Image (cartoon, rainbow, N blue to C red; front, side, top):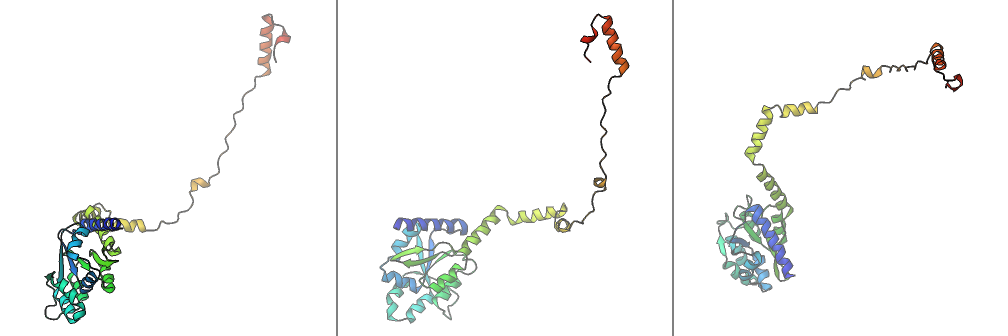
Length: 244
C-alpha cells in the first residue's frame, strides 16, 4: 500500500513539475487543522514529507494561522507549537487578521506564483483549492500524508498551456495576418458560409438520346454466286461439291 501511494505521489509531482514549474525546495503552507491531525496521528511532518514528495521541503505558515491557533486556547496548544516551528510567510492581513483558510487562499491568488502546496484537513478549504489551477493539496488520512490527484481545473489549465507551447502567440498573430493578406480571413469565411442557389436541371441532360443505326451487313448478290459456280465448273470441281 505504501509503495502504491508513493507511485501516485511521484506521478502527481511529475505533473506539477512539468506543467506548472514546481521546483525544489517545495514550499508547503500548513494550517491549524493539518498540524493538529499530524500531532494526533503522531506524524513527523518535517522528517516524513521530504521523502514522500521526493525532494527537500520548506514548512511554512502565516501570521493569521498563528493568531487563529492562539485564539482557540489550550486544546490546540500542540498544533500551535508545530506551526510556530514553520517559516512565517508575510500576508496582506497584518493589521486585520482573517481566518486561516481565507489567509491561505489569498496566498495562492493570481495563479499561485510562489508555487505553494496547501496542507489542510478543512474540506471547505480543500474544495476551494480544487477550483483553482496549479495548487497541490495535501491532507492526512489513515495516519498517512496523501498528495491529492490534480483537479479537473489543473488538468484543463495544463492542456491549454501545452497547446500554447506548441503554437506561440506571435506565430498565431503572424498566421492570422498572412491569412488576411491572402484573402483567407473573415471575408473568405463569409463567402464559404453563403448558401448555394438552387440551380435548374442541365438542358443537355433533357435531350432525348439518338438511337444508333445498326449497320446491315451486305449479303452477296445472286450474280456473284453464279460466277463462282461457273469458275468452279471450269476448274473441274463438280457442282454438287460446291457449298451453298
